[in-house]
Image (cartoon, rainbow, N blue to C red; front, side):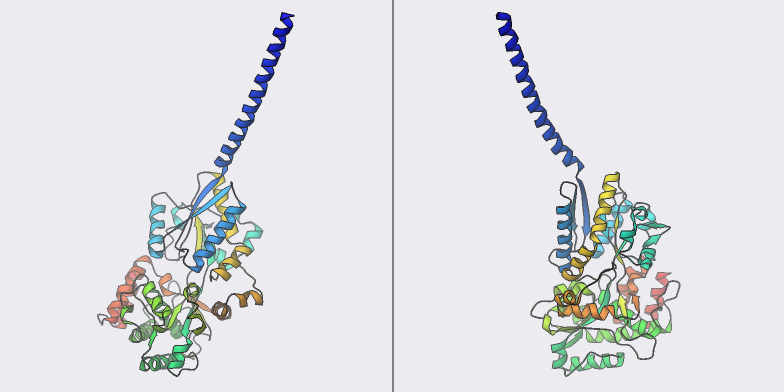
Length: 432
């Protein structure tokens, strides 16, 4: 009997041990599963200048949040924002040089500065470019991003730079329509000035963006859209004449244009202090509801001599996205997954309709969607899409040393330290 009791107790004890062991095992598996899930999540950092107080920044945040939600516990993208675009580009170059290439970043493409692509530290996306992803882009854009046989950047943005003008200020000066020729344009500037209205926003700091937009439009109007083609000298009669016109244009801008940056120049237009500005679609998100009904969009004037086709545009350069080489296949595939998601049809609509960003990716918008975009963006899309030809802003094609020197050269010409001929000659010398 004692043996039976002892045997039963032992059996019961063993059973309890098994149950406890099983529970521990399950708890351990659950904990292990959670740990495994954490270990499997790939964390990526995206560097951008698009702050969330801008339309494009909000659109980017929406796309990132949508992606993170769809890839919960698998991939998480965190946005690191530096709103100073020139400083951010320099930071990326420094990180690449230091062997700490960012996970995902965008930059201004310049065919005269391929230091990023030739660093050997960018992820080659060629093997991931399947037919479905490839169909999102034009062959021309993909070819432009291919350097030494490697596709290390994804085409994303190549926005047209158009003329925005304040219809109310035009009406106050007795101007009924936007000018179609440059002679008419300068007549309009005179009328605005006579009415006590500053005609146009310009700037010379950083990349002298608004000034170089005007300069590029003038040079192309005089010499055609091939005036700045690679291999051509900048020191030509057409470019010198464009410099003369640019100097004249600075007589119709604000006192703070010399030394002013993008924020100063655009704010002058956005507060109604100037009647015109030459800028891209990103300006639209900053136009207040109060000012919006007064703003219209137009194509550039020409000299009417056939050198360029009416409606032609200056564009920003490609602003593609790239990824640094990864130390694991999982992280590499995660970065590619995000780039594919970012350039999808769904995301492209968010960037265009909510962020006012015109993309390189193919996108079909219905008439209703274009109308919903709002009157200014709707005008922009229509004007930009009808452009018969285009030219990239000069500053985006200069070598780094020349791009850096350009603002001080413009200021030197405005202060009469250089003639337009000397301005162009010095720019050509530093660009060689």
